[in-house]
Length: 460
Image 1 (cartoon, rainbow, N blue to C red):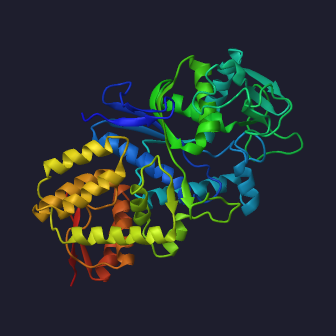
Image 2 (image 1 turned 60 degrees about the vertical axis):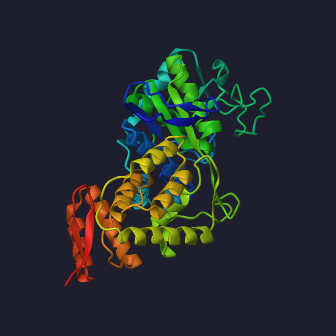
Image 3 (image 1 turned 180 degrees about the vertical axis):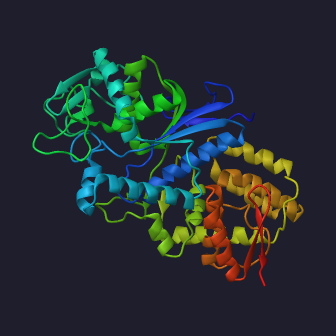
């Protein structure tokens, strides 16, 4: 196999990837809290995780990816204070929390498919693993790592000597209220809730009995319990955005150590922030952008994917509408050029070798795109160029294997075609046939080919 290198947040250096089990990878990714529409900052992290998984698979690894759906326990403060985000969403929209969960989970998964992000091997909903979370907390309690105060069961971070390592925290200089909300009952400012008690004066929509009282699990507990259940007490990779390093992942790591007395995750890998017009994106700033807004302005979701590929995952991605327009033009030009290539020929070895080296070197997609441009300019048969680019697209995920004939499509027809291919991926063949009929009525005949490829012809 081609050596693969990742930047490990835990060691702050790039390391050669060596899985715990030869040829197999256990991979956990933090998923959404399904209380509202996801925004493109969220999807920057999910795109990075998708490229990471595709790179491992491209190099011959069998990847078991687990992604959580947080449907309870994530409070408005990441540090166990405030209102549960699902309960807040329920009040905002006048629907039950279960209706909120179903609706926004569906939106999230649809957005993933529109961005051509592969589904994880296993989806984990926090509410499906309540007993596992209770059992996890009980084991921590039995080892003397927890204590109970008026609002819940807490993990005592002073018992874990390595607590500050992942985020390089200055624990001795940490001020109450600086990183976390003030709670006078906590022993240490960084201590975090494993189980929160329901308010005495009201009944929550989501609450369960536990050895400590009626309530609900803390946000951090779910990922530890679910990753251990599905991947074991040691696994290869935990990935997400850098915003999870100082609190969520630091607390997960502490819990994992508390249960196992060892380092459970071998590689912690994180993507940088997405900025908007050079600044932070946030609800309070009024500049949250969703994938639907991108579509409403006439852009393809794959143009956003193409934009994300142009910036290394460990560098900030500055989103502007002008940058997205340029990405849309670049993507359209790429598609149009490939349309003229006809069916695929032979992969060009020298370019494939270069490509594999750069994507395996900490997911260097900007350099990989540069190699794609070299292929387009090279003096090789167009059929061989196409075969080479289709191979590259196993990483890029831009659906470049879908256009084989020079049939002009409108933006709307390209969207219908993308929807049809996604329907085939999820085996919704009824929808795929319906979309093919719609395209046929518009003069576009879709002829399916092996390996999920197709060609386009003008229908009579």
